[in-house]
Length: 153
Image (cartoon, rainbow, N blue to C red):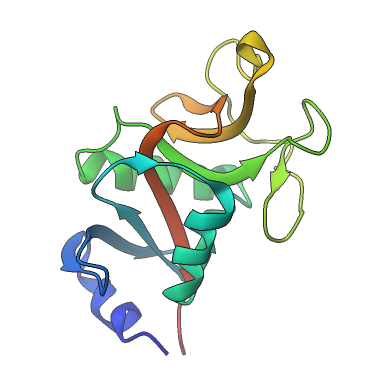
């Protein structure tokens, strides 16, 4: 079991991972969240496997409150203007966004950015989170990603 969740109660920290990549961390709402510091070419399966290696999974937004907390976390970490992928996609059916791992749909109160999702050029099937809400985008851009881990009791 990862030791990291016990270290996360202090707020945003920079902790080196076992892969030599730094991450930003924060705990709230009974979970710990971490964002990769270095952008890299995104792939849902690969990035979820990395999250799984730390005991978690790509971010699954379960409420508007969680979405707001994650946006605040990204702001505090200085990443709010960056592309940060979540674990959501509509690859199964256009416009029906669901979580990659659990297959749960995004909640109906999810806040999307203005005029989003728009499936621009017919290739936007993944989701990033930023100020103003969620945005759909191409699943293979070079960007950061965010994982969540349940807190250990």
